[in-house]
Length: 312
Image (cartoon, rainbow, N blue to C red; front, side, top):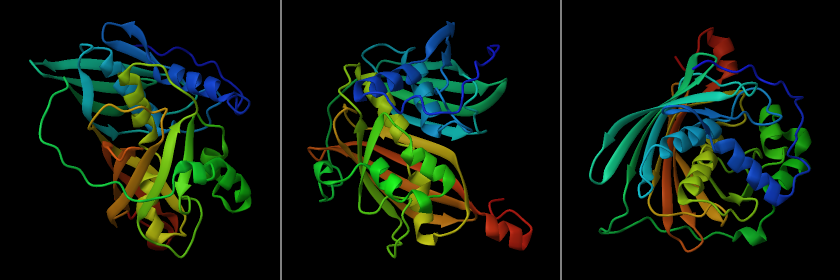
């Protein structure tokens, strides 16, 4: 499908002066891909975006594209994707959905995300009807509630001079997803080198939307700080980060406009890569989703010393 020429916008922050309701509406607009042909969809570019597209945006848009091709009584329960190339925030993204399977209880879709004629992400997603079965889960940790924690953008502004440029821009800019870190946020270096991060998140205001959109917003947020957890034991170093793959499982219905606790831990890092797992809980302690991601966390200093890339 041919790309339309982008309308270049100034690299400012058009979300900076928006109200919480407006921020949430802008996120829904960004993720809600529009039809562009049979099983073809087009995703908007983020207004004022700079540089590389945030991975969670591409995942969420691909998921929305797939969700629009399945029966209404089937919701995504798992997705698995590979990031192949970094996308540019100067262009929209095209999505082609392949209808691989529709059975009695499950449907499967593959999505190819393309930008300027090149594939930037492949996603496979499975959808199912709700059902009943035996249940167990890992218990939610005991942490401070979000009401007793400071918004992460306020913390980032206080530590602005010490922030790495790219990370600082991400956490300082206005966002439709509010974050409140339990303990030190990922951009503050401390003596605590444990490979884990914990934070609350939710969209900025109440979201009256179908369950598939609530799950898409969780997919959008599930990419936040996964690589940072794997890199934490080794900081400070000049990291060259990039997501390689991302998996997400939904365990029950979820509301993204209510506080969710994301508990991330990294069991391994090596060879220029890091692996992280996450469990996402609601305020009642229910595990609503799980995620896993492997990402590149190359050390530029190692690359310069050896003359080779430790991630290859």
